[in-house]
Amino acid sequence: MNELVTITVDDSSPLLRYTPNPVFNPNVFPDPYTNWSPLCAVQGSEAGGSRCDDHSAHSTGLNGARLAISFYGVAVEFYGNVTLGLNVQVTLDGTVIEPTPDYTGAINNRTGIVLGGANPARNLLMALSGFPIGQHTVVFTVQAGADRSLLMFDKLRLIIGHATSFTRTIIDGTDEQALTYGPPNQHLWSTWDYTYQGIVVPAGASNTSFRASDKREATIYKKFTGSAYLYYGPCYTTTGAYTLLLDGTANTQPIEYNSSVPYQQAVQACLRGYAGGLSKSASHELLITNNEDQKWLTMSWLEVWQLDLLQEQAQGGGGGGGGGSGNGAMGHTTNFLLSLFASSTSPLLSTTAMRTMTTTTITMSTVGRETSSMSSMTTAIGSLMLYTLLFRAAFSIFQ
Image (cartoon, rainbow, N blue to C red; front, side, top):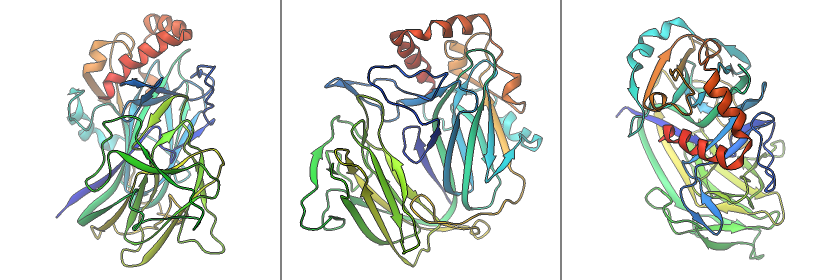
């Protein structure tokens, strides 16, 4: 067996750290030139809201805006789009990474890829690889280009490595025998139906209901043996701050995340927690705690992974994503691929840009110099309705 193990982190996942932190105000449409603007290409409406699973994005044109994630793995791919010469600086474990020419062969092989369908390379903006397996932190920093330049971010794909053996155990959130909901004897938890139908869940997890509590200090506890865990639960406007504590001791601080999403939006299969590089044979303890009253903590399912990675990858520290720690030292040459959309007009509007992806080794700041059409289009974005329609059209490149 030689299976590539990956994790998709959607733009709406609480594991992503946005700076500035997006402000959700139901009365004010977010301005992508002063902050991050969370958007949803409405798939269907019910009770005034929308299910945004796989149909969301964050956009910004703010110079210095940042996106960060810590993870255990060997590579990361960034999916999205840029306009008008906007560039993204990448920092890996505190070191700025520059594009390297030794990736030219792979880049040329990608030229002319048609977007859409099941092609995993669609809308791939950049990829970093070549660093040793371990705990890493990647920071993406926006370097604004021409006036009204814009970044549209869809998702990250974390490459954990190649496994010689891999098993995945699914623990359904409604299984009160497998998960311990607390505090004991306080009856803080209830079972709810998903707001929208069509949620995609792994075999063994319920596609109709989940567990939730809106009481501060409500907890979920699980003792498990495995190499990694992933925790999923719906993210709504009414979900809030929570902490993850993995193998806690008196000196361990839990990590806090915020699961709130924009007004009247819902991400039902929301990745709320992840840690990898754990000792496969050791027993681990996970504690999830609600940090806010009248804000919901949710649980859909928990995944426990048992995997053996190829020997040349089995180095570096483990943990992260829930109180673990470790560092993978920089080694080898880090490959940095940039994929840009080529078009004579705005990439958000051009049929050519939505059909064909061209890749190149030059930095983003030297491409995307569309002027008149993009400038006039972005000037008109002041209208909420127009901006939403443009986003839906642009978002079709993610599918």
